Image (cartoon, rainbow, N blue to C red; front, side, top):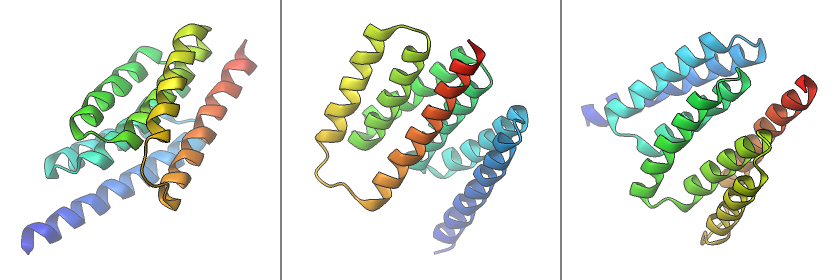
Length: 156
């Protein structure tokens, strides 16, 4: 019982770190956002909460993209993809493929982008259920990806 409470408490603290990270992103303080996300990732990894770990690792990748650190973003996406593969999580793989596709698209590497968008569609289409939570997650990631794309267009 104590371990369950500790896990719950640690997971809640990790969620709080993500809230702080989001606040920092809205202020364009990407360094502090990265620090908060890394704290959350350490906490989640310590308790073995891998699904949320993979989700937050993707958020870290998106923050790196906002900070024009594409290489670091890809490192996050690839690590999260490896974990999603181990977990056999179609929804996580779909999300990661979508993020990778968006990154390739921003780089003008349309052939690679299309491949990963297709992979995302295939994984998402293979899900047995489409829950409201999953839908909200997709909307959030689409919003962030669009914000990143808008930023790249403005900078060009």
